[in-house]
Length: 160
Image 1: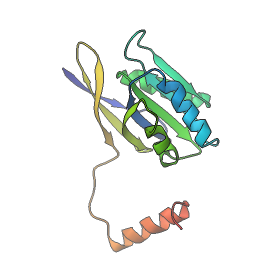
Image 2: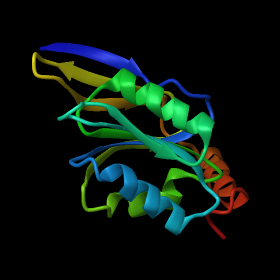
Image 3: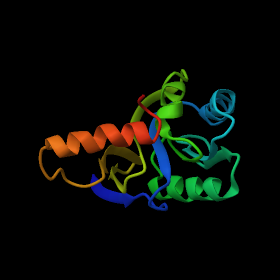
Image 4: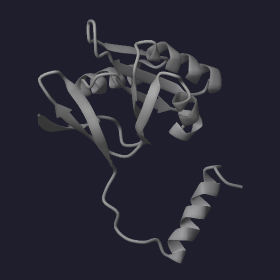
């Protein structure tokens, strides 16, 4: 077995969801779930097929995000994984919708942070072991940090 690290290539502020599924039907089901739950989100999805032709299957409603999804899915090349890039929304807006799709097994991360994916490769194929999401923690928040956090959540509309 060989361990590899695959860096997700994206603009700094682009959000994405990385997950694991079990069926080619995931491509269309994720598309339908997103457009039925939030018509404002622009997105591109790449899905790594792990049998048959073993292609990166793709869908979306934004050409730039679709290309980003295809490129990153191919770089990962991990069976039945999917990567969904989005704009005009945050993962929190659609995360439960995605998790409730019957063939979605797990979510590795949902973030705009820089991410490295730890991949294991064997003679059979590749699989995701986990992700490195963002940077190392620097300390414990202070009262000033708590105030900033609370103010920020209200500023962006997530708390009243």
